[in-house]
Image 1: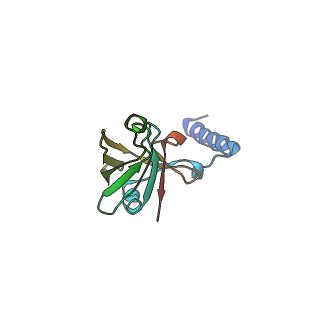
Image 2: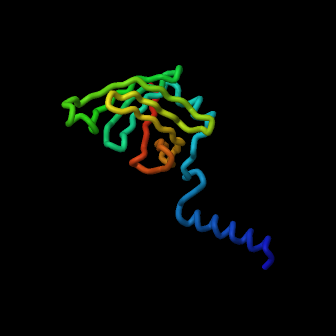
Image 3: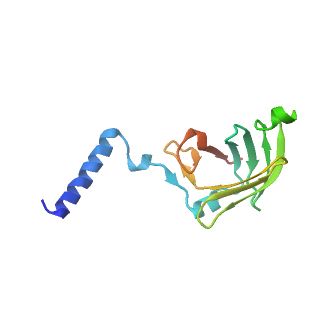
Amino acid sequence: MNSTRRFAFSILAACGALASTGLHADDAPARLSRDELAAFLPGTEVAHVSRAGSLRRWKNEADGTFVASSDNKKYGSATGASYASASGTWRVSDEGRYCIQIDWRKEAESWCSYIVKGPDGSFYLGTVDDARRIEFKRP
């Protein structure tokens, strides 16, 4: 079998394997592009659970600012405060990553991540993993 026929056969075999598992190209996670993020993010309300387990919420204002609130799980028991708020900024980087800067009283938070839309329509930071879920809603 020549190399062209072998290649065509392997492509067909791979397609058959995907079809037999019930997975289709439409079911694959999709990373949002820079242009998609720039059009989608302004005005969205965001909910995200930090690595420390704190639920934080903010609204991505069109001017790139927001005020974040948190249930303060990381520092709440130590300070006696079960709620915190702080100003922040958001932007879409040239590489197409969603970037956040929040000036919390105890420590600043700064990160950038690609946004991935899972097959079920949920959004994630970088990879489809429930621990990395981020919620965007239109008011």
